[in-house]
Image 1 (cartoon, rainbow, N blue to C red):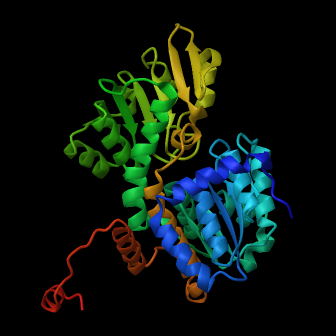
Image 2 (image 1 turned 60 degrees about the horizontal axis):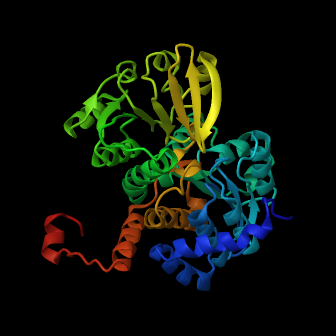
Image 3 (image 1 turned 120 degrees about the horizontal axis):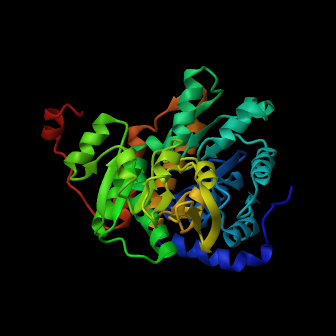
Amino acid sequence: MESMVKDMALAPSGEDKINWVKNFMPVMRAIDEEYSKTKPFAGKTIVITLHLEAKTAYMAQVFMHAGAKVAVTGSNPLSTQDDVAAALAKSGVYVFATHGCTSEEYDMYINKALDLEPDFVMDDGGDTVHMLHTKRRELLPKILGGSEETTTGVIRLRALEKAGELEFPMIAANDAYCKFLFDNRYGTGQSTWDGIMRTTNLVISGKTVVIAGYGWCGKGGAMRAKGLGANVVITEVDPIKAIEAVFDGFRVMPMDEAAKIGDIFLTLTGDKDVIVDRHFKVMKDGAMMANSGHFDVEINIPQLEALSVSRKTVRNNIEEFKQKDGRKLYLLAEGRLVNLAAGDGHPAEIMDLSFAVQFFSALHIVNHYKELSKGVHLMPEEINTKIAEMKLASIGVTIDTLTEEQAKYLALN
């Protein structure tokens, strides 16, 4: 089987990108050095469905060096970087992904990867697991387990589990403390505003920014917007998260009210129809909308288009929707993940932690799948601690340790 990428001639540029991020991923380098010798994944096939950019590519290579046969497909049509895909294919990983692929091609790429009959699947949003439970059920007996990268994907997994339909153990990598605390907060916060600012070339300071959702991703987006000088408004459906936002110093109100005052709207909920027609009707002229909550359904684009008299691209990754009353509303990156579709995704130092979580999740499944029930599992706490210790060591930070008496006092022994 051959990889399916845009153009193998692009590989040198992709190799440069992969080599660059490796410099800032010391935990993954340490994992690579250790497990390339022991090869714990020898004889195993791993299918990875993630945003195919340089950091993902390096993780795929680490798995390959650890003995696995690896196939990678993109989890978002606009986040695949064709030069990175070519470089990864050249290195020996099977790659099925192109930037801007159609929905039909997207499904075809996942199917192509699954044709390799994986033992382990790493998913981002749940599309590959969904494919396995619907159109590719013949592969289920071979699957030892998998892991899920996102909040949205974990929600879908828990729904499958609740219905008694999840056919193999899945580790909720997203829910690992070392993942959501850093990746969702600091990674999403920085990369989202990087994508928005490089796309619009506009100032954030002084603008009213409406953040939809105050989970870990929303916290990161709000924190960075505040740091950039924005007036931040939070919309929420969870009363506990809403009061947390109040105590963090933000204004909280329903989207129906926020829609009237926002200059920039950022959705980070993982749900659909967060911004809909009644909100578009009251938005200010020049209001901009972006999404960092995974799928392109948080902002209801068909309703926005139905209200508009024209739709055109006015700048790369910015579409203008002109309303009947002359107002112009702007949508960034087609409502897809703005940090990846219009940027380079999370910083390498952040993904160093997240992909260490993914690596050890896969290792845990391969070593313990016989003991794990079908369903959603949390990563063992000792692995979280190990990753944090590796990261601290890599940046030269040391911490205190408990004395024996202190440990006894806390009943930790």
